[in-house]
Figure (cartoon, rainbow, N blue to C red):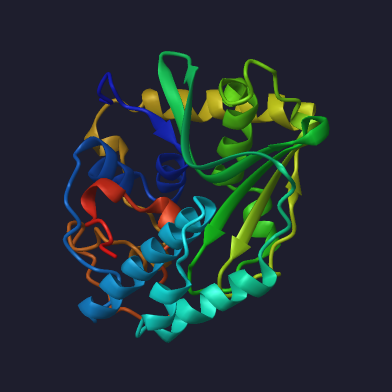
Length: 267
């Protein structure tokens, strides 16, 4: 059912957890997004563009470029607020080898597991800090991030593939921390640490979940979720003939978007 070149990621694993039919439509049938997450198309597009801009500004700043003028000229007050929060409450970043917008992948069985990292720093004494920028609407909760697929995949992949960025030096799980920084709520999430025991538990969980997905025999096995709140947040809801009104709680997590189906932000 799954094509030979398919690669697993935190996004695909999260999607499978939320709704198997959504996983089928997005990753196996490669369906274009038929419906925005809000009835106000311009608002949906602006939310995506704002998140893209913010990520690009942080990246360009890491290159030593001056981005302040472009931000101050922006007519988007929320983007300016985010940048002000970044300037005043950015997470502590130790000196070290810094990599931004880095894609890492590791072999896992007959597949590959990939992770796109906003930033990773290899600091003194073997410390490794993974950073991920969040621009969603909802205030994040610590528990939601401690036990989710993104946290599991990012830490696992950095330990397994980090030597590619360290000149061959292995990464000790005990030295790894994952820092989520939310543009609207800078202090909402505390750093999430790692351990060797968690690393092996992650390996086992990934093995089991991938085997479950690989074992699905046909399209009928990719059932629609019974959680209709997921349908309200799903861009594919019209394909399932579950057209539900959009409420005020819609949100976009940029780490779950299929960027190949979205336009690039133009500065």
